[in-house]
Length: 165
Image (cartoon, rainbow, N blue to C red; front, side, top):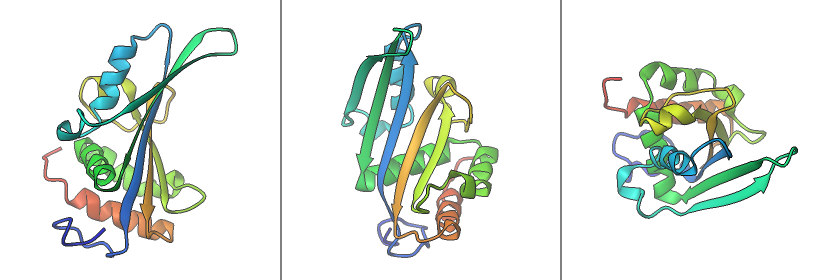
């Protein structure tokens, strides 16, 4: 991420978000339109009209219908969406995300994984959740070589959140 492109960001000029993916499962008892709305609520309003949702409907082990919705953003839209998601969280959730980054990094430290409540997202709120009824967020941060660098990146990103949450 280049400092001149991201005012207030002091991270290394070689660190940037290259990809962000949102994915969610829904069951036949759920309203797919509401699940789509929950996913869209995690995307900045100015990008919602431009995103493409991939949706697949398959069958579970017992023949039950299961839908899978995925949205993938790249480049500056991925960064904007990550910042939007993180800055929409309550401060306590942002702090938990940073404090638990070692548990949320993939086998490569440039990959960050976390989950947010599907129900809260539908209501327009972003809440970290480690349960089942979630939207999975996967982020690739290029230029990060260690979990400590990923943590520094998140600390800088969260420090740029201006809301009072």
